Length: 109
Image (cartoon, rainbow, N blue to C red; front, side, top):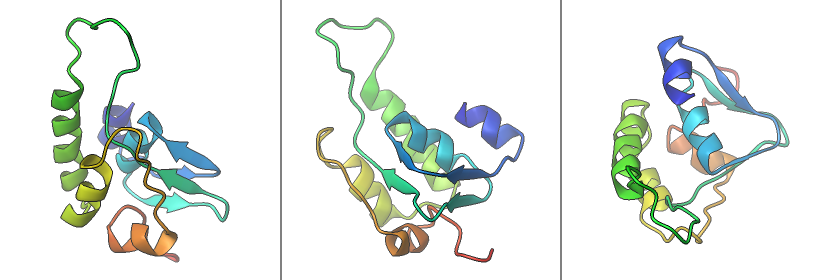
């Protein structure tokens, strides 16, 4: 989904909550905005399965998405918050943190 959003230069907006895979699609947007009640929640990648899933390597997928996030202008400090904590350690950034990190567009832009 993120590749399609990026390929067509679509804007993304969060109306309520966006977490887990939703954040990957959101950050692919050209202009990224939050509605008044919108919240983004980030965490490190993981697979909730008792069995190994062939051809799926969360660490490799995470590295690909870190590169995509950098291309979208996300700051290194933000990437550390998102990807260097455990998968159960959720990060709930404020709107001000999201603007400073390049995750969302400043209001009025």
